Amino acid sequence: MKNLSYRTLLTAGLLATLAGICGCGTTVNTTERAQPVGQADMVDDKRVLTDSRLDVHARIRGVNQSMTAGGVLRVQVELFNDSRSRRSVSYHFDWFDQNMMQVETPATTALIPLVLEGKESRFISGVAPTPACKDFRLKLIRTY
Amino acid sequence: MKKLISSLCLLAMIPILLTGCASTQVTRVTPGGNESLTTSGMDIADFQATALKMVDSLLGANVLPPAGTPPANIAVSLVRNSTSKPLLNMNLLTSKITIALSKNGRARTWMNVGIGPDGKPLVQDPIGKATAQQEEWEKDSKAVRRADFSLSGEIIETYARAGNRRENTYTIHLKLAKGNLAVWEEEQEVAKQTK
Image (tube, rainbow over all chains, first blue to last red; front, side):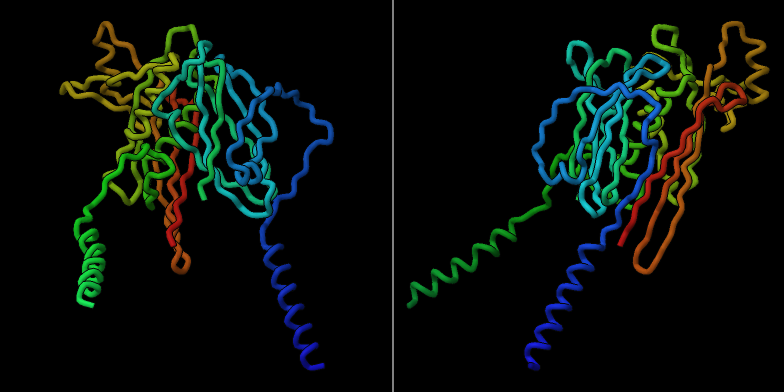
């Protein structure tokens, strides 16, 4: 009887600890219009996923594009952290002209750090360095 | 037995010889890449990321002439360093911005805002107003054109400490002025935490 109660207490304690650990990550609640008024120009994208964990921690939900007032391509990507923990990633946009030649400037080679809270969706955007840029590629990499 | 002992001694010597021959290893890394060092100050990766966000913001704003029209002349003015690091050279940020704008074709860097009576270049003050000396000089000159815009700003460092954690936050504020009017402003923050 003593052993049983000791075992029961130990099991209950372990379960409580596990529950505490699992519930530790802070996650994000959101609210928005049920019927968005804005019209997004969504882009059909092609994805190459080599890191399945990164796909959980920074899942690409959608890509949309627009032109700036100066006639330059702007791209926006929605990333979603499907885990319950805060995650850090870095991203980088490559830009290509109509001949698919890469266009680079000292600023465009940068890796931008990004932190996503658990279950958080964030938008990242890039503006093409020149009006000649017609295409892009987004690179994501884990930084933890 | 003797052979065994001598063999064991030889084996024991190998790691000592290897570590003794070890020297400082230098490796090429991508500037600002994942493998580059992260310090509590402004690293090259921070300058690159900040410059990119500033350029994106500037290109997205409707202040520079559109593509296909004559580019604007931008004078790079003072970006004040209000950090604890006096050797921090803000050209690491502004040069990336001006190069990007130049390649974009919408702006060119104006090398000197004006030349003072002593022959030295004059720099506009942070609010974008030309000095009285420059105005006087321009009145006498025949082929002088004032820069269309001036780029100036400030980098400010704040420091916080909690227990054994230290946090340095760098706030970079840039503005593009047309005369006395700031037509574009942007602020980016870089925070570094040390345990």
